[in-house]
Image (cartoon, rainbow, N blue to C red; front, side, top):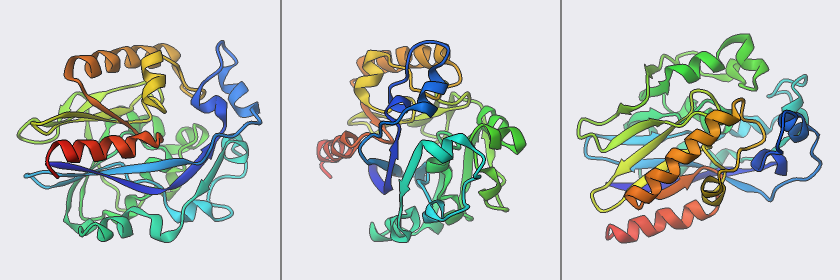
Length: 266
């Protein structure tokens, strides 16, 4: 079993999104922030598994850089995000460059439905799409659009398998969805036990490993209480399993996944 990191462009966000302000005005302070982060990777993941190829998150689509793709009335898209994604950055071309075809992917697991994690769904009409039921309920419809989910861009064919985490994806039980609510109410992380190592594909449970270790809440999480509880569980899991921690937007995740491959002799 091997994990590949797939970078689907970069994103720049407000610094207060990565490290949220304290207090009840946390989200408003994120929207009002004038400082940007450096360009951050938008990572998706491919797991080569004996039961079939697994993709975790689908990255972003190049269409997201086109005028009018996001609603002009939404303050987050007006002020807080700058995407850099070319057509050949999308997950389909990136998979083919690795020697795989999207049609060969058995499962696509979404940690959550924010655009930079679900934007590449259109590449996987032949795969089983697995989403936490709580996440889909939060993200769908008009309320979902107000919450920042551009759900009108989801593929017309989308008919996901809805699960409640924790959930074992593989029959072997070595790939699991773990509940990590906080960044969104239905957020999940995916754990992978390769036999040689244990990895946590963390999505946006935190933006970096150090922020997880420090217990820092991000600037857009709807529930800081849930967020802090999730970070505490992740810290315990990392310590107990000597886990490799792989957040979506941390450049160090690329180095860590290479170290996993080297550890496995790949």
